[in-house]
Length: 271
Image 1: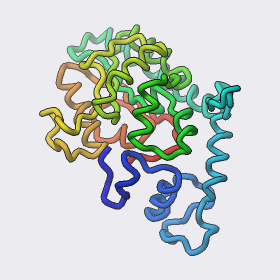
Image 2: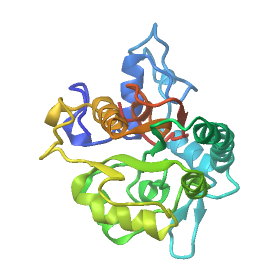
Image 3: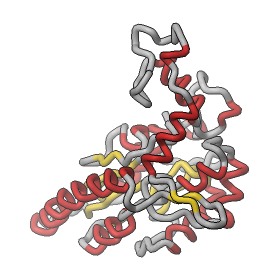
């Protein structure tokens, strides 16, 4: 995804642990909370104001309930605090959608209800990939991984999406993954149980080389412009986006959606 000028190009699409911490310190924001520099000390005065990266990684692993298989693969545990938090968010979403989708049926509105769902760490869990690359994202490593490996679904998200579709919501996947990764992404979603339409009209990937005409920002779209512009395009086709799910605030900002659901993700930050 396009990045603001303050991020180094070598970071490519994502700012990983070290760079995320540095960016947060510069901005005075609380990404990790513990030991974070305050707004008054946007440039750390001592090392004590900077989170230790090794300790941050250890906390992330503990949060996900890191499980290592005999062949050395890392997976998140369904009994982890991460899984519990996700299920709590999904329970709230299900309660909201139960009422909202039933209300759409009673009122007989012209706009069909829809939900928009991000892919990475909203629909599919990247934890195994992140551990393999040491939280250091590159487009090359992601391509290699996606070409040969299916990511697990985020705990319970496949069931929530399928349920919402059965209740009458049209499902759209909206991701910052590049268009060249479409076949791998669709294969993965299908293989892990997302039983909803996965054609081009329902799965939106970012095409920087040939951006669609409905995005006036074209090749220069920020994440927020790309995602909100695509949601507006979806609504222009006769849908009312009743819920928008994403693990980044940039997935959720910009309007075109009645309610947002922020999924947890302490592994990386996308502006």
